[in-house]
Length: 419
Image 1 (spheres, rainbow, N blue to C red):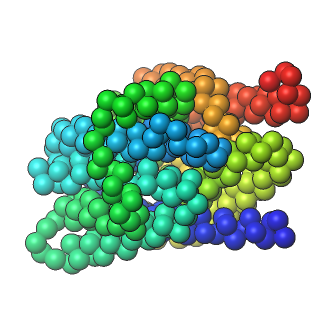
Image 2: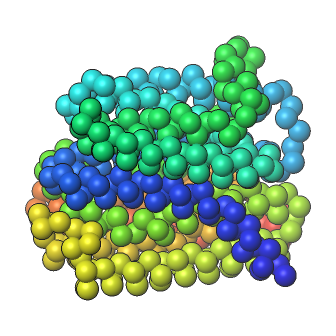
Image 3: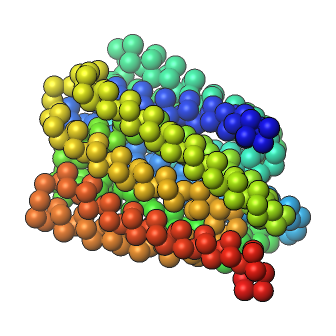
């Protein structure tokens, strides 16, 4: 009965992110099939950078919000209001920075404006999702995801079928419009929180949240971003957008598993935080095991589907402009890295739920330093595809460090006097 209930909840948590992934895959697939590797590489670089705002929102605002909300602590001092007020102000500043980035990548002004607006709205949207999960209203988060997917795909179809705008313009405009529409399901309560001005009292409240949780969560997420996407940034800077295109194209094959992983992480974090607050260690262990089994099944299923595509029908996804041999080797590297990430994910989410952001930050800092150093060395002496192979080392280091931190946490609950 426990596992059936868990599966139903996983299904609810996965509906929205699956729709998101399908939408983003459709955008990337269209760019991959209809544009040159250079154009696809530029889109990939900008989209990876934009998705970092999601991780940023989760680290600075979503994870701390879920941590204290799921621990059933009263909202003393207006912590929810403080988180939302600071998030919205920061979103506006970050959006301006991403608009500038778009212009520096030679996007036309209207496309750069849509790109900057998209990153701004996504920060507010992802905080809204975290708030809904922490507040016991996951259906609103799912509705937001579905609205985003429906509106984005509809706008993309309308834009590409019209002679009024280019394919590139349609893609960025669709993303921005879909992000705006996705705020509607959160309701007036979310709007009231999001438009609140960060007063002195709210800023002071957030400073306490920053010291306790957010700074370590931010450090961990930033390090994770470097560990995961160092190749995208460095390869683009050193070798150009064309060089990153085949690596990004191979990474598309992992998209289904990434979606499920992100969806279940958002669901499991508040659940594990609640179990830790109740000292339900046995239930926590059982939840971790089930989480890992589901992720491993997703890894196996995604790998089997990717192998079938690459062996029997690669032309379905990849155009003749891509070297299939390079795509296949890159895919093997990505799936090895994905397995290492899957193996450490339940422990990582448990540490987040426990507020152990400092331990996570330490692990991801060491991992990212290893990856960035390795990628830089490889780019100096070998082809860009080898950057994927060298990142296996960094992710292996993170797996070992996160596992050790998780064991220490559980040992502390088993022997409270040693915590």
